[in-house]
Image 1 (cartoon, helix red, strand yellow):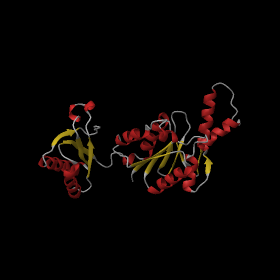
Image 2 (cartoon, one colour):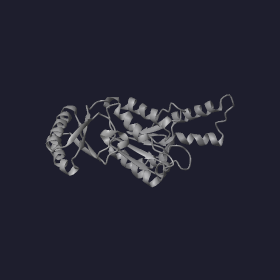
Image 3 (tube, one colour):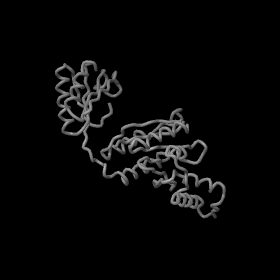
Image 4 (cartoon, rainbow, N blue to C red):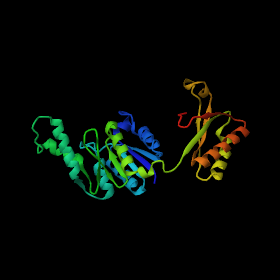
Length: 270
């Protein structure tokens, strides 16, 4: 079972808004010993959203979808989720009560007519695919929803991030830190990727479950003297015992090839 993300909204693809969800979800997962396996960005196109959600439901992965669950004409996610599942949309009773409570709170001391057209329209935010459960929204009560392992939250970070944390800490605590994992790397100078590729292939062959990565850079003087020369961020990741042994082999191999190395702190951005 992997973790995936679907980030929905024309505003992201056009550059009108900058996506903040991807790095935050990576951070939330990492804090729990988990990692993100894939992510997709989609505009406000019903056909594409439906197709993507259909794949997500079928994947067996734990998937977070952000954006498009409001009740304006450019919000399509609820409808697309229902279409992907082949079920109808229904007003969720608990969601309806939460929305009505929000309407009363917003009105303050003023009398509230819940039958006004605008208040009835707000209930659309509580229509979810049949069989969905709600995700509490600590910011303004308007809930998100889950169907199986696919979870739908608003596009607003102030709402979405606590909702995603709630899902992780309510539904998936048994997965937290369940698989020990380390990632170690070195900055390699003076060697091209072509020369270290056989070493990388040998390590993945000899250390079961260990993955090797190579991230070349042309250099960035603004980040400090150690980064100003062209280099390769070369490393391994996997179960601690195997990964640490593979890392030792990696360092030995780079040294044998005549490369210069500077070890990178775990989690450092290079």
